Each structure stands twice: as C-alpha cells, then as structure tokens.
Image (cartoon, rainbow, N blue to C red; front, side, top):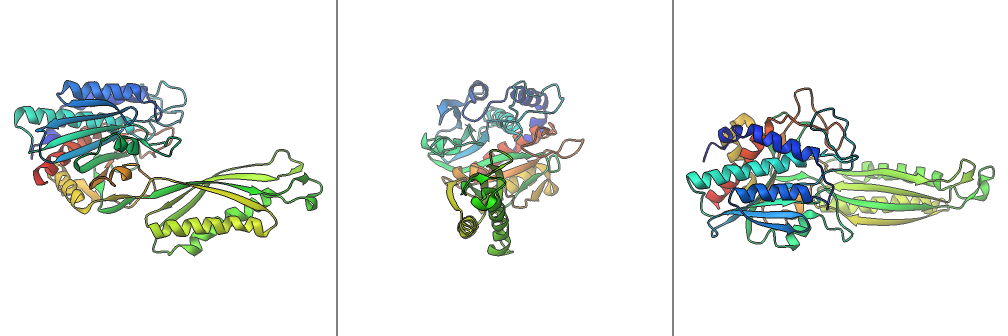
Length: 394
C-alpha cells in the first residue's frame, strides 16, 4: 500500500487553506451551496466523474475502472447555528453560524483523499474497482419528512452498488493524530420527543382552585430521570435528557400547561423500547396528580454499528500508516451520527480522528470548538488508505 501519509503531509498548506476557507463561510443544513460547489469543483479538476445536486446539495464523485467493487468515502458539509467565540483570523464570517462539529475539516480531508487517490491512479493505477466520494449535506438536521442528508442521498442513488463505506469524524477532545474505532456499536441511536403537561389555571393566591402544571412537571422530570436508573439494566446504556422546559405566563398565575423537549439515547433496541415506556410512565404521574399529558416521539438516527470486517480493514490500514500506537480502541459514545443510515445500505466503519489543539482539548457543538490543523493530512491519508485496502481485499 502506498505511503499516503508522507504525500499528504506535502499537501498540509493546501488543506489548511481549504479548511479555513470553509470555516469562514459556514452553511447550515440544506443550505450548503457554496461548500458543495467548492468540493465538486476540486474533485472534478482531479478527474473525478461528478454528479451535483444529489439529495439536495450533495455531491457524488467517482474515480476508477468502472467495474469491480465500489468503495465509498463520506464527508458531511453542514454547520451549526452557533455564534463562534474564537478569535482566530479564520473565524466564521456568518453571524450565528459556525463549523462547531468539524464538518469543514471533514470536507477538506475528503478532498485531500481525492487528491491522493487521483495521484495514485496517475502514477501507479488503483486496485481493481472504483472509489466513490460522498459529500453529504444536512447531517445535523432532518427535513419536514424526517429525512437527513444521508437518507436523501440514498433516495437519490448515492449508495447504489457500494460494497463498503468509510467516514472520519474529528474529535477535538481526543489526542491529536490518533485514530479511534471499534467493531460494533460506536455511537448511539436517538429519538426526540415533545410533551405537554396540562393543568388548570387559577390565581396565584388561590392555588387550590387550579392544577399547577409547573408542579406536575417537576414530578414528571424527577420520574423520568429515576426511570433510567430503575428501568435500564446497569450493564446497558440509556439516557433520557430533557433539554427544554417552557411554561407559565405571569408570577401570580398558576400555569395551565408546560411544554417539554428532550431526547432518548440507546444502543440496544430493547433499551429503546424500555426508555419509551419509562417516559410514558413518567408523564402519567401528571395524570395521577389531577392533570393530563400529551406526548409525541420522533424517530431519530439509529445506532452507528461498525461492520467487523470493514473495521478490520480500517484498523490495518491505519496501523500500516501510523504504527500500532496510532490506532486505539474507541469507547462507545452517546452522540449520534446519520452515517448510521448509510451503514444500513452497505457495511462500513466510522473512525474518530483525534484533533485536540495544542492549547488543550475542546468539545464539539460549542462556540470555542477548534482543531489542531496538522491532523488534516492524517485524515486525508487515512481515508485514502481505507479505500485502497478495501479495494485490494473486496
């Protein structure tokens, strides 16, 4: 297998410039026109056969013999509605929008991998088969029909014929330059829910004449948290988080309703069923205290489950490039990824790439999120190496 890492290091300045340009110009889910155009233009110039407008603003690009196995590499492109607090010269120029999840780096690394593979084809030829690049929109958000970018691209044919698929996610909380992965569940599945606790309004001085929805809600919240501790086996993983509570209209009025918004996280389908049932029981506490409730649960992303064979290929490719200490076992994470939806179409593996800045770890989805840009070359090389080795073995 080629020494992609050494070649990628020669692209460091180009990858940094590209990532910073994307970081300055973030685009929210379903709005990624500029990012998609940059990606498509870049890979077309390298000789990739490119299709634009896939599943919205997605881009599909191919390079190879046209027969044999198809191995896909995916990068997401959308940003988040977060106001950046970093003072870096490449900080976001769009008010209230930033790349707080590293999708700017993902896009830059996939373009870098495209460069490495195009150079390999020119100089030596690729193994038998085709590499397909998926620049995916809308990982962070679903449309009105509950379809994220992965589902939209699938519906538009992006996964047809794919034998294996790989993706990288930067981890600004993880040691820079290290790859992390595992076979099986690596990221959780999620559902979201909205609920209303219904009481009866009255004057604040006469609470006995009403049913206080705020008090009911307090009992529901405690019941929901206790449900996890007393419903789910301590050997399993499950989370109920209530992130939004809205209710009340004045300090001297007993509230007649309170709305809740939250999420359920799980790895096992049985745990998912238990969490949903526990949430229903927690809301029923309001009924028992004289109120009522309404509940709507919206299906989210399934758990991200890495295929064992695809993960073996990724681990061996990574260790050939970085050494045995360069690839570590990943702990399962309760975050979600719509890459899981792509994995329902073909076996594959999600890898995390440590990207903690020199001044200390950061967290995703925060206004000070940033990365050590030296990992861009590592990520580009890792993606190219996964595709190369998969083509060799499939």
